[in-house]
Length: 343
Image 1 (tube, helix red, strand yellow):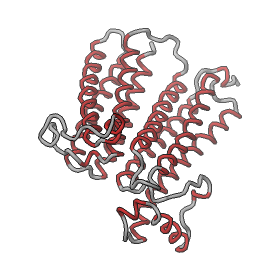
Image 2: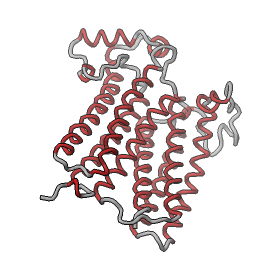
Image 3: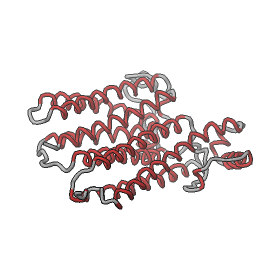
Image 4: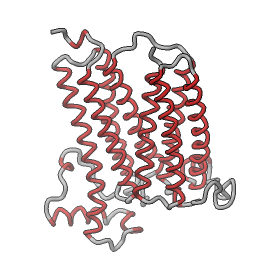
């Protein structure tokens, strides 16, 4: 039998990577629900191994609750919370962390299996190793983010939330790209055309918009200026400026929401222009044109979801759907970019 090391593709490897991407997508959804329910600080310790088990007795629950009572979120926001109410937020955070462990296992074990059986294409070995490191880094950054809310704040630092979410989406995009590479094999010829740059710009704008959305979420900025297209009846919010440049860019509710809105308009225009241009192109394959149109349609739907989420006061189900749509739009843009550079 011909060794897969002499092949540039592996369908089983592709299926594995797509499955891990689906788990990362689930983590994004659960992470969004965890944030929207203010559950992210309910577990105040980081125990990568022993923390996989939830409290198993009433004494264990009492100890967990006692640790939570020591942090500012309980003292300033949730004082008087019952144990039953604490359990409700605890399970969200525990589920999010459990999914993180499952993603790690779902990547590491098959990765080792494919390596041992020599079924992983050579050109993907280092890339998969980098994905594994990126996943591990995500866990560390997740704890770094949580730690920011345990001492002097009642929530996590918005910029740390942005980095945490940004890494998750970067991992998702890289998994989708690598899975497509594993499925189809190395391109026999790449297409040196403006479409490669246009697709990269499209991904970059979507990713930047996701980062800005994380700042909106971290500052609870979706709960203010709930009218649209104006902001409290004005084109420019009156309390835009913070105490300095960084305070404005990362911590001003008015500023982060305005930036998120403005980039949404730019991204929507770019998506429509991209889809129309792709449809008219003589150089792109039909499936590439379809991907461009579907990705642009996803951007339009996402923009409408954002407006609805804002104007309805960010209900949990709509906030989660908005975050899920962002992940799907990014994945579609990655698929379009991957296909656009191949003949």
